[in-house]
Structures are given as structure tokens and as C-alpha cells.
Image (cartoon, rainbow, N blue to C red; front, top):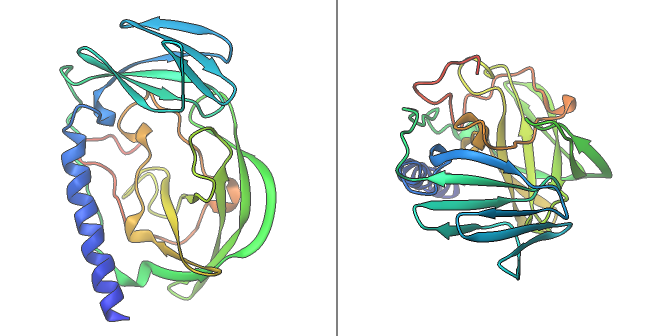
Length: 243
């Protein structure tokens, strides 16, 4: 078990270093300078490209496409579908907010291997923009923090570009809005049949912590924990905690 934890800690540290470097790159969340809403069936001409929003993706310059980022000279255009299509414009040369990512120290107590308690249901969850996002609740993960019983709903977004087996936890906790951002996410990883790795040390901030041009899922009420999860990504340095 200690070997597994050591590997998990090393992987988390590598991931953090990669994220720090990525935030300085041309496709960083911090490079976002504009957002163009693009309802299904409508067409946008932008930076030499013709982009049409489709129910299950996009048509770019006459070719079908899923959500992705395309080159446009100085700019990059991020095609975001989420059943409410939009194009986010990235400008690597634009001034950026001076935000520095930060993390809690790795704590193996927040690394869990859990069974999924199946309870499938189609649900709608909130977002940081004006529409809800369609999801499927696969079930629940139950665990304890400092002796307190907790559970979180595992969700799969029903949106173009989302892998069919992707499961995520959108949650808030007692650190939210103070030590950490008001919500965080964890990607759930399948370990073996029926058992999943839920490592809160890999909890990460949504894109909207870095830019208002993104649309981010909001944790459902049942995923608002009263315990403190002092693991994973903290509030970025340089941000107003009430943002």
C-alpha cells in the first residue's frame, strides 16, 4: 500500500508542475480574452474561420469537428460545446492576471479506493453561466473524513466531447471560499471492477477561477460537504477569495 501511495504522491507532484507550466502557455485559461455564444444552427465567422454549431459538435470550415482548439494566427479558438456552444478566444500575447496556483500538501488520508454505490439517474446541474448542464448520476461514493461519514454523487456530463466512461465529483467543503475556491473537481479513476480511486489530492479548480469566459459545472446540493478537505488545489495566490 505504501508503494501505491508513494506513486500517487509522485504523480500528483508531476501533475502540479505540468499545470504550473501550462498556465504560462498559449492555451492557458489565463489567455482567454473573449467568449462568443454560438447557439446550435448559427454560424460565426472569426479570425478567418467559419464555425457552425451543431447539436453534437461543430462544423469548422466545412469539416465536422468535436470540441477542440484551432489555430487562428495570433489567436487560438477554443470550441466549447456543453450543449450551449460557444467559442472562447485565447490570446497568448494579451496581458494576464497575476494568479499563481497553489496546493495543500499531499495527504494520503485523502486518497481513497471506493466502491461505487449504483444509483443511476438523469439530472441537471447548475453552471456558472445561465443554463443548466445535463448529466447522469452514476451513483454514490461513501467515505469518512476524520470519522465523519460523507457521500458524493459521481456524475457524467452528457455533452459532446466527454468520454463515455468519464466520472467526476463536483464538490464544495468547509474550506471553500476561504482556503480553497468555492468549488473543486476530482476526476474518478477506475482501479478494478467496481472499485475506483478517489484522490482528493488531485482535486483541481475549475477554469472559471482563472477567467470569467468559461462555463463551469456547479456542485449539486448533495455534494456540498460540511467537513474540510484540506487536499488538492487551494485558492490561487493573487485572487480575491470572494470571487
